Length: 100
Image (cartoon, one colour):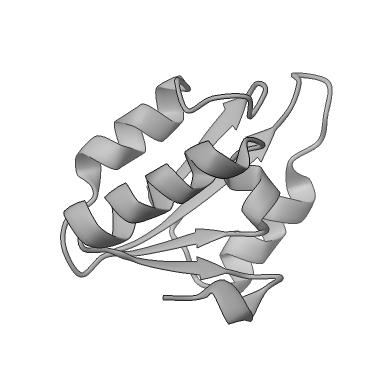
């Protein structure tokens, strides 16, 4: 399955740019998870819901690494969990160098 994760820092920010990028990658709307809150940690409801659905071999799109989170150490830990424990691939749309 192909999933997308969108995050904006507050409810008044617009997520359209990220949603357009997900549609360009053919991510189905039902597989796009979006949180409207700070990226200071990973205790976000939609992120947690998405994590529970991910299965080995799935692909996760994020527009940029900072949409995943803000704390470098926590991003590294989540990256490890996603790629090693969950067995998924990650595509960072605006920085393909990071793709797994």
